Image 1 (spheres, rainbow, N blue to C red):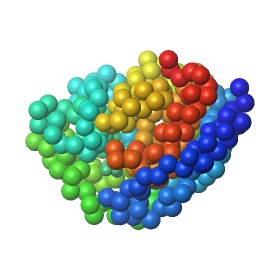
Image 2: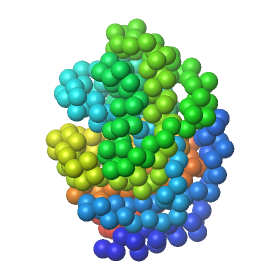
Image 3: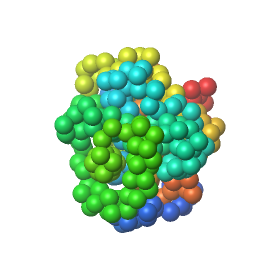
Length: 304
Ligand code: DON
């Protein structure tokens, strides 16, 4: 399979269809991004890189960062983690608070904001400087210094973080939050405001295509059984209330962010990241999803 030819074909088809959406603006600073940006990077298990378009340009990874924090916490707390966060798709938007009350402060899954806040809270209990540890971890997965926090995006989100703060206090009311809410929200917003390119995202996700072993870190990041479970969670919950649609159209585990990025893996074959900032009404990138759907259609295989 010539991956370079494949992703160029996908890139050209998406560019000529040119589906449009809306750049996220609930974080005002994100609205300044050029909506025409579009990049694809694929990394195979040997580390060969195939790229098209703006694949080397850093962008705001936002919720894609939740895969790194989940992986760190899974590595530290092992199966004890699942008493604090569930593994069911929510069918609700990423920032919904409704289910938390019915389900007594146990978030549906680690990718909705409530679940990701519990994960960041666990990292805050473990580390004096959790954000430094998260950066170190991502750099290790990528095999180079690649993470940069965009301070404007971070401050912009912090000025509009009433909802995430409310989720934190709600979790605390149910005894599922150990640290100061504002401190954890700040760390959460900081890891969401990290910037990475498609190629670095694809490199960093390659351990999930490789049974938990990173060729960049040269070590097992998580046991194979955990890598499989993180992939399962990405398939069932990575796109929130659009997870079914993504599984239906693409058939791969993937994680989206409101910066317009999607990171995905084909286990035992490759990792891939796509970026295009214009989103659909569920907050997921229109062009990125289209690109991945075309990719698996052309490959004639997905997970299935
Ligand atoms: O908490 C938020 O609202 C953002 N920092 C992240 C949301 C996000 O990326 C949702 N994914 N599509």
